Length: 276
Ligand SMILES: [Zn+2]
Image (cartoon, rainbow, N blue to C red):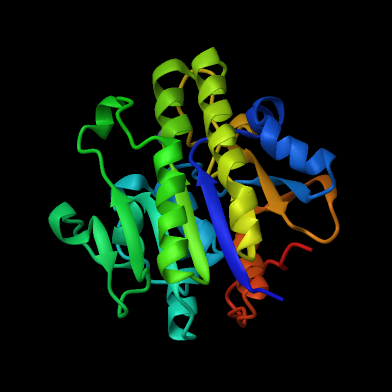
């Protein structure tokens, strides 16, 4: 059986919007092809702290990246470093912050936008950046383009662990709010892009996991403790026991779950049990 995993992180996709507007993903549940959990994001419910929680199985209070402004190289055991050390291959199509967290800082587009380096924890990286991100404009790579980049990296390198991270929902949410039709539409666009690609990834032997780093408020921000910013969906497409789990699970469970799927040992510091 294949041990290859793709993790899709849809930045800022809240739980309710996933259930209501991601018809492809929900169709996988209805068809008995997937299992879905309700997952609680780490605190603060901000991107960099939650990226690191997803990859280290630790809360920000323990991994130390407690704010987006504290973005820096990860100092904890994480999926990329552990997989690389075990001789597995890794790849990412993701925002530049992932290059800073797991490869090298600072991020210099001319050097790092296309990374193919066997010595890096993310060996094959295709990173995008947006220096005007404070204005949350929408000229980010399209979800279809990001999925196509994943296709190309799989065709060329067959990575054992692949991260796909899209910022489209988060960017639209910051402009229009988490209850806007624009945000719901952005969720639907991501869902459609995934619907075009996931069957192909599954056919190549990948287990496909889809989740978010955090949710969203109606007012267009996140970071606090309300259900709307903490609750995200976690889909496991290809799970042998399909269904729905509504009892909340911790975001800290993601890293041990992925390491276990890849056949790698889980460090003692990752205390959450893998999802089953
Ligand atoms: Zn955001």
